[in-house]
Length: 77
Length: 517
Image 1 (tube, rainbow over the protein chains, first blue to last red):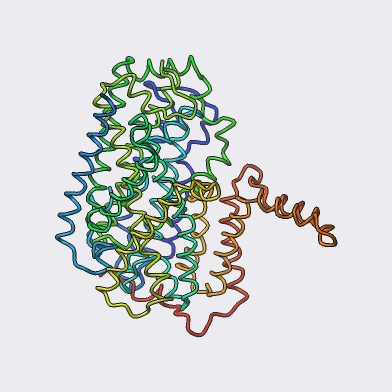
Image 2 (cartoon, each protein chain N blue to C red; image 1 turned 30 degrees about the vertical axis):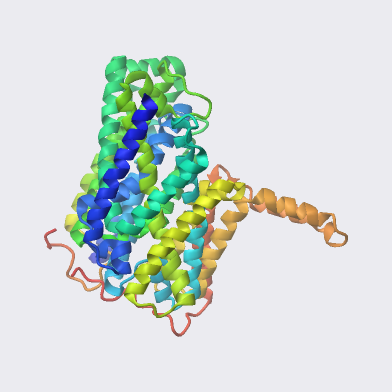
């Protein structure tokens, strides 16, 4: 179970890194309220990353690192 | 008027910093651990902003907007990925583990942590030596930058050597007195100041030119290609190479890496981690968009000059421009003082003490630590006066150089199978690969000289061909830095697999007793 959780969080980390730059908007020059659309994506993505990091810190902090078990999950931050 | 004002602001800032340092000094225990790590007590805001200010300071103010001005605003994305995401993940993966280990075993430096696990004073010295090889010229660049800026600001009244010397003297005084606690406190002021002034600057300039839509329309008229994502400069390979290499490099930079040991608690690390991407994007967007917009506005930037001061001079009152420029100079110093402190700790703990004075008392080590700061800063100052080209080249490449340490260290932290020979070979191979790429011209030059000699001369052309093929600087668009990291990873793992661990290695130390409390 814990191993599955670790794999899941690793996947989240990779996705967060992979899409911080919106590759699918390559060459796109659309602007919205004076800023390029790709910049808006990036700003939104960073906010999403902060939310995900916050959730990780509350729920899964210690995973893959702490060794004496029981420390992850229900503990309050 | 402007120069006097700027000097006044700089001096005012220095006095404020000194006052903060004196308060910190009164709270200090006279031990090396307190001097280097503030006894591992930093809180969320202080840890967050001291890392932030140390990391970004002068670069964000000057170099970043310059890049956006000359190449386009995609730089926001590269820096966002590098610092906001990659470094944040390393903050957990490297930082939290280091923090736990540091608390458990009392480590102060990266080399100490590795040396203990692999029972190797030599590895400890190697890591410290490599770090100093990249750090020393980087500090030198900061001093040279400060000297040049002061000279320009005062129209030559304060010559380069005097400016750099005064700033070095102040930094020595400050670091020796204040230690980590004082530095972290002034960094916090610095980081907040940077964030607030950058936003005010952007709002001011946008108000003057009629809002972001108007500014972007002007940019489109001047350089429409800036608005489309990607260019000949910003290729996917280049963007990824830069973000990954610098992101990993930052985590191994001594003054940043050492902050992983300094957090007061687990909660401090958690909170800083979650706030990090927001802090990064909040600074990068206004700072770099100002640089990009300047391209479309009526701002004259001299060849090789900085964009931000030119924009501010054009659109904001003189006192505000002076405030920002003075802040940037002060920021340069706030990065340097952290580097001095870390550099001195690497030198005293990992090189001086293990080799020269094994059983120094805590009080004595504290004295040696402070003396180390003086030696390190003075040597870097003398170096900046001579302006040797080789050292400048090393300083410019420092982030990539530090990045070469990251993967061997990560492998050691997370894989029990890592052997002393494996990690040593991995570190040596990636450093060797990257340095050879950096100095390929010198190597080829050397081989050409050898080529003039009889007998050996015959194989020289073949050797030159091999060297220029292996160390070609760019590999299908990927940088030598990222290829070197891969070399380090492969060699560390490969050599570990084929060697057996030495009997005295403490293989379990990174995997046992790492609890939450």
